Amino acid sequence: MNFEKCSQIPCLTSEELKSLGKWYVSTGKEWICHSDDELEEFKNLFLNFINPEEWDTISFDSDFMPFQQS
Image: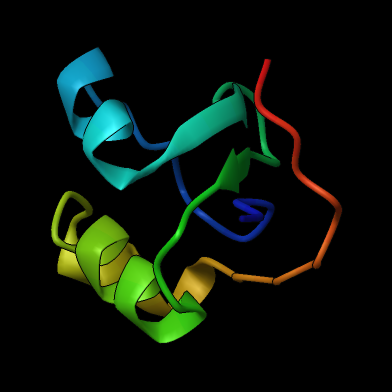
């Protein structure tokens, strides 16, 4: 997710983040997460935690990187 156009970076609790997936980066203007959800489902779940006025300023991208859990 990219927050370059947002007026402020979202602040989610660790519980909120964990409910969405495994996070690699959750600070700054670009966050990276692995989720088993489809992109649209993930986007809808994530936006539930965000001020609706910011929804159109957040960009979501999907990249199919190999994922290996250790």
